[in-house]
Image (cartoon, rainbow, N blue to C red; front, side, top):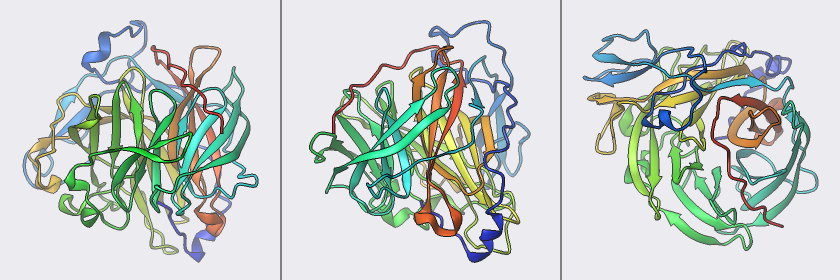
Length: 405
């Protein structure tokens, strides 16, 4: 979702760009999934504890370990296992040039192997953008980032937010926020070649303020999506005191039929500003890792002089309820997923909405690439690529087949 900023927000133009890396290189804990025995090194050092939130009655609560029986919600502890950590590559956000393509408002990105990525934007352009990004194999820092071509895809909607590469590298799935749809497109022809049955709870009439299906990621045979902020049946949008309930949806099997649906609590807004009225905090993308873990990318616009804050969480599904048949998340009666903070940064006017796992680096870690929506350049918003480094991922990523465009 593009965020249009007010005039007063120009005062934030000099906000530091991605200056804060609050992880300090420490590892946040990986969830204790049943997958934990699948080749994870025993010597990793555990760092934090993830708590799931059990919603037993009406009310809301922040999904943190400090929440205990607050307003009827009971924290159920899940001891974290040694796991993943994310740190900056040591580089500020890198300008992503559109070249002569006209690509703008990029909101989703997916890795296709080598230096090739595919991106989509939410400005109505029915085009799948091919992005060239070269990284330093030792540090993960970006050497060059450029939109090189576009694939005409007339079947795309007007608000494309997420993109995920298919397992054979020939197709991508694209989520549309306005239509609440997920369609599959050929990277060779640009035509629609399939679709995914999105549960009815996500229908457009249930979407608040254009905050529908922002996320899309594929890994380990599963496709994942989520809405950005609460659906109408699920309660209020984010405030300075409470986050927003969203639903993470899993699709699996050969036909990607709807599987388990999970409740996830976003962060509250840090502070409202007298200069704008568009402060927001929500879930803008998911990243399915090859070991089965899932990361959540949260984006906030807030503060007295409003700026964007980017946070990456590890989602903990242990003990979480299937909420597919829960009519309203605001009514309680379920256990939400837990989450552990892996990285956060103040990214100034870089509105990062897309995340993807990049190539493996020379030390065995992986590059993680973010892409920002420039909002057509309104009030200094910028189109950037940004590289982070993910450590602790034990399983290699299969290299997709690159497609010539």
